Amino acid sequence: MNRPRSATTVWLALAAAAVVFGAISVFAVLSRSPSAVSRGLASNPNLDPGTTLSGRAPDFRLTDQFGRSVSLRSFRGHVVVLAFVDSRCTTVCPLTTTAMIDAKRLLGNAGNQVRLVGVDANPTARSVGEVRAYSTVHDMFDKWHFLTGSLSQLKRVWAAYHVASEVEHGQIDHTPALFVLDQRGFERKVYLTEMAYASVNQAGQLLAHEIARLLPHPPRVPSAVSYAQIPSIGPKSPVTLPRSGGGTVRLGPAPGPRLLLFFATWVAQTSALAPELDELNRYQAQASADRLPPLTAVDEASVEPSPRALPTFMHRLSRPLAFPVGIDRSGRVADGYQVQDEPWLVLVSPAGRILWYEDPSTSGWLTDTALVQHVRDALSRPATSPTSSRQTQQELAGSPPVLAALHRQASRLVGGSNALFARIRALRGYPIVINAWASWCSPCRQEFELFASASARYGQRVAFLGANTSDSSADARAFLAQHPVSYPSFRTTAANIGPLAKVAGLPTTIFINPAGRVVYVHTGQYVVQGSLDEDIRAHALGG
Image (cartoon, rainbow, N blue to C red; front, side, top):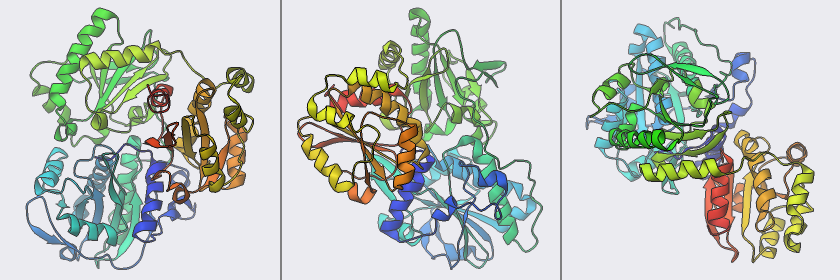
C-alpha cells in the first residue's frame, strides 16, 4: 500500500523520480494556464489538469488478472487509459481507479472504444492473485486489464514511463501517474492523482473530456461537476450524514470529544476488517462504562465500488456494530478530517480540534486496550496553540549556550548545506530535530505552527533546525516572517541532504541522537501536535 502522503509530497517524490528515471515534463502541472483550462480548474490544488505529452508510448507485455499475456500494442485502435496502481494500495490508488471507471461511464456507448489498463506498481506484491484481488474488491474484475509480471519486467515498464516505485520505511511509494494514449499508441496526457476524496468525480469528468476529444465522433460528456476547489467539511463544522441501516449521523462540535473511524469495505483485501470492527465493539462498550469518547464510523462512499458495497458488507458481519456508521458520499468529510489512508482513526475535541490520529494500515490495528490508552493519553495532553514571540522567549530562557545561539537566529535563513552540516556537528551532545520544508509546500505550511509550538516547549533540551529545500530565498524569508519559529533554517536541496538522510518528499523530519546518528525519518506532514510531540519524546528524548 502507499504510505499516506499529501499531494505535494507525492509530486515532489516524482521530482526525485525524474532525476533517477529520466526527465518528464510533469512540472507543467504547476503552470496552469487559464487559457488551457477553466478558471476553476486552474485554481484547484486538488486536481491535476494534466500535462500534454507527445511521442509513442513504450510497448510492453505483461500478465493480466486472468493470467493471460497482454501487450500494450494489442489495444491499438482504442483510446487507452494507463494507470500505475499498487495492487495493495489503500490511499491514492482507489481514487485513481474510481476516476477511471467514472470517466468511462460518462462516455456512454462511446466508452466501448476505450480500454482501461493498470500496471502493478508494488515491487513486493506482484502475483496474479494480488492484481486479481484488487480488481475484485474494487468491482473492476472484468472492467479493465490489471497487469503484472516479474520484478525485472515491471522495473523495465516503470523506467520506460518514468515511474518511481520503491519500499520506503516498510511501505510502498510510487508515482501516481495516469496516461492517456490515443488510438495510434501515442501519449497525449499524463495526470497525477491528488490525495483528495472530494475531487474524484472532478477527475473522472476531466478524464472523460480528454478521452472524448480523441474519439473519431466525440460524444457529449455531461459536465455536471464544477472544477472549482470543493470545500471540505472538518470537525469544526456541523454536518449530518445518512446512517447505514437508516437514520442520520451528526458530526462536528459536540458536548464531548469523539473518536471516528474512516474506512471503506475494500480494506478487507489488506486487513481483517470485520474482526477489527468487532474489536471496536469492545471499545464502544468500555467507552460507555468509563466515559470515554464514543466511536462513530464513517464509510468513505466516494471510493466504494457501488452503493451496495456497504450494506452487503454490514449484512455479512457476525454481529451488529455497537456504533453508528455514517456515509460520506461526497468525500468532503474525509478531506476535512485530513484522512490520508483507509482505515483512519481520529480523535477530535468538543470544539472540533484534532487531538490524535492513527493509521492502522501502516502501524497495525490497535487492541481495544491500546486504543483506550492512546485516547486517554491524547485527552490528558494540555491544549497547545501557536506561541507568541514573548511567550517563546520566556519558555526558552535559560537554555544552554549552544541552544540559545539557535534561538537568537529565530526565523532566519543563515546559510546553505555546508553551514547546516557544520551546525549539526557543533550540536553533538544534543538531540536534533531537522524539519525539511519549502514555502510552496502546502503540508509544510500546515504543520509549521506545530513546530513553532514544539520548539518553544522542548527547545531547552532539543536543537531544532529548518532545512529550506528547493525554495527561493525571497519566498522562504517572506514565509518565515509570517510564520515565526524559534530556530534558524538553512538553504538546501533534497540531494544535498542525501548524505544525512533520504528526502523523498516534503515535508520530511529527521531525528538525530546526541551521538550524531540519524535514528528516525518521518516522511510527510504532522497533522496534529500530539503526533509530533510523541516522536520528539520517542526519538529525540529517548521516551
